[in-house]
Length: 236
Image 1 (tube, helix red, strand yellow):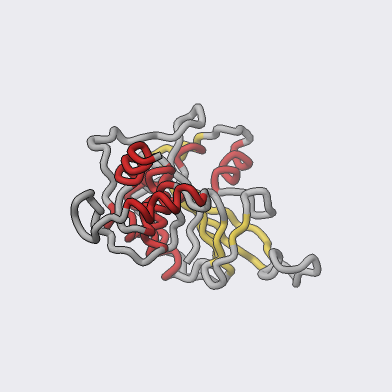
Image 2 (image 1 turned 120 degrees about the vertical axis):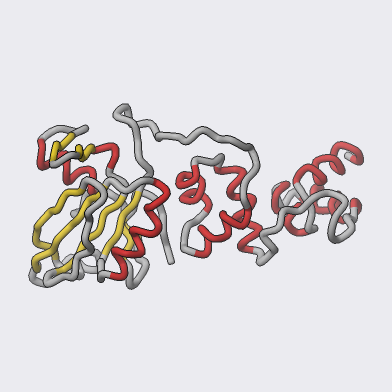
């Protein structure tokens, strides 16, 4: 199941569309309704902001919409052809409903699942941003990455870039875990001196062949990047 950030994803076919389509983005819906790029819309005991919208969904009518009681949201009513993304000769447009919601980052996945369970045709998500357009980052209490947690995100359809954005982690670190997941390796962190014995000669051969990156060589030999670098510095 695809789940790239800042893209519309068709819940049945997993087709991904960029934001530069007829759908726009849930943030652009608010901007258009208010007439300002970084719009805010005050409501009952809440404020819906352009940069705070993190989740969107689209349903064709009639629809069983999820109830949004906790977070500020915006409803958009428009016409849309069900096959607009597949052909230029689209069928006659039908009534559609879009919902844009300010969902907290740690609730995006669960709320997106609710949207899909209620029959959403398309979903969109992005991390919350500040009014200056930079991502709101949670303070990092530790430098290590929870590999099991990353595996869970990958199992739900996120790729390395989406997972890195979702957890506010360095992409290079996440892609290493992503390649482990793709290779079918355990989520348990590999440590030098544990598990399968390392063959320095085989690692040197792969380094000299220059066909794999350090992370890929580490995965191939069931070791860590640090071990690969130590072998390279020692023998080359």
